[in-house]
Amino acid sequence: MTPEGLYEVLSKYAASQGIELNRDKEYVMGIMRGLLKNQERYGYRSCPCRLASGIKEKDADIICPCVYKDPDIKEYGSCYCGLYVSRQWNEGKIKHIRVPERRPKEKQA
Image (cartoon, rainbow, N blue to C red; front, side, top):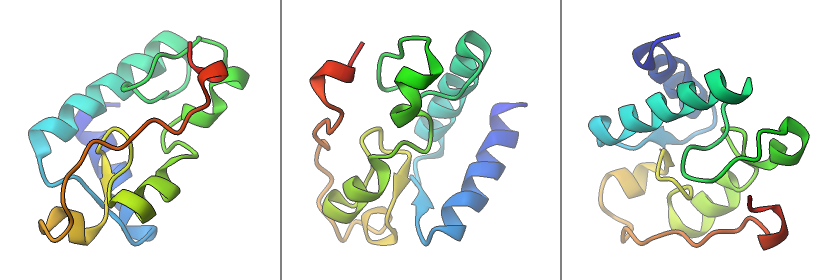
């Protein structure tokens, strides 16, 4: 799959969830390349903004879309890596702040 193809897939997924991809397409395409690189490395698309262990079961919580996406968007308007965002975030109606890491320290590689 190409980064552009993954962008289309994840854009449709986001729309089905009532959210959007970050409007900064250049930034998003970097994440797409990272997701595909991790797919190639590990066999699954772990979040490129976090360190993966390479063990799918251990990394299940950070396979994109990660389990932290929904609470992050609800609280901050954006997920940890800034890939998935609310419409209000994309429109600049929500202050863009760095989303704190929710992943427990013991799970971090």
